[in-house]
Image 1 (cartoon, helix red, strand yellow):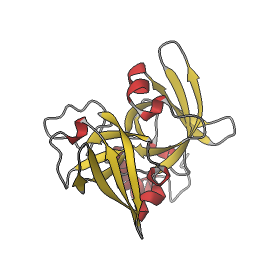
Image 2: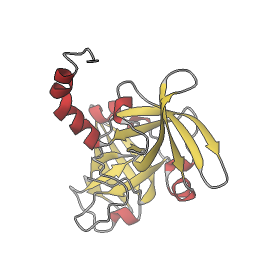
Image 3: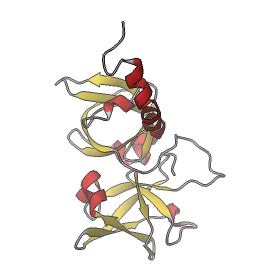
Length: 213
């Protein structure tokens, strides 16, 4: 479990192709403190298990399913990535509860800078929009953010916007992502559980799908 508060920007050292996976090595600093094999580190919001430690680096095995459902398969040596260690019971919950399980990949539509923050619009993959609400939480490339708006974009596709403060722009990959770039998205896990628990009850209240008036 994570909080969506990025600890540092790591740098992809290498990607070793395997038959059905990739062995990813990342150069890092602070996230290596107290870290050992078997520990969890989120890379751009995707929870990975530390398989090996080197001199200022750590390595994880990324399976094909993860490569297919996240942007990790698009990484190249030299790319910067958001890193966060798993939380402990003594950790301050500065963001929100993040599992590190990417729900889908979105695409940055636009960036609108202002004097003190920047508004970023992101197109949603089909099916995720129902989990987002204004002033709710969403994770973008592992960064915990507050949803500003959810609704149709200029082309009619569903999008949402977030406001990025200077600290976020300077300390995460969101500071240099551009329109057209793909980002990992994780919706609030509470929304998914509520949907699951109320699924049958919602159908009953709606009379099997038709709204009661």
